[in-house]
Length: 337
Image (cartoon, rainbow, N blue to C red):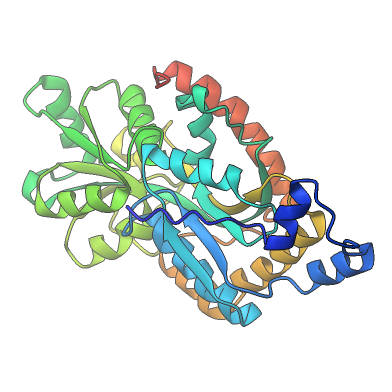
């Protein structure tokens, strides 16, 4: 696991932080000018899961487009462990200057619920920048499983003839939450196998080590089209044009399961509004690029509208999800660690 933690304080700032005056500090005009010039050096985007999963794939798409929009390097760094906790902790320790960000999805909201001793708060310890994609969840099975469709899978599980396991990217990830919700709504039981990121789980799904994964279309659609796995249900009101051969959960008998995932960028708390606004502006420019929109559409995802993806709108989503996920975690028996 690569964990590169460097001091974000230049020498002068460090001495000033110790109470030693070296000379006059920057004027408000100079500070504003520096914020307006953002970014002026490479930006790190942390991802709290291993490479190969949906969050990692989207983060790299976003980093590429941000680099094009700003002529600056955006580096994706995988900081894995504890379902994103280590990445969140590092974000909380980072300087609030906009040069260290975190890309995540709803799973980030669950981190404080799973690890209350860490003392983190999704609303208080982050500054919302914006969302980039809303993605449906899709249930997939390994080719070796012999499972034909969702109705026959559920029938086998209910009769006891089929013993299922589901892989996810770790405790509190969206896949873990989705799988627990699905099993509860379907009235069946299965073993939940936790990995350090959805990438390793999907690798084992393709190899037949595990039987099923419930994850975003961003990752599963290309594998389904390539015949490496078999998608059997999608969380969408209607079948998706990108995968018309895959029935909805409603068609499979679990109409109440309809989970869409947001994916977005957050900065550390205390990041100046001017920096956040600049980040949001270039992020909006990036997600509206023809290349990005075409890629997202091909993966059965949707780019949020300008109003939906704004920092203020994203901040409201984080606050709402904090309350809703707290209730949901209790309902599905998610235990703090």
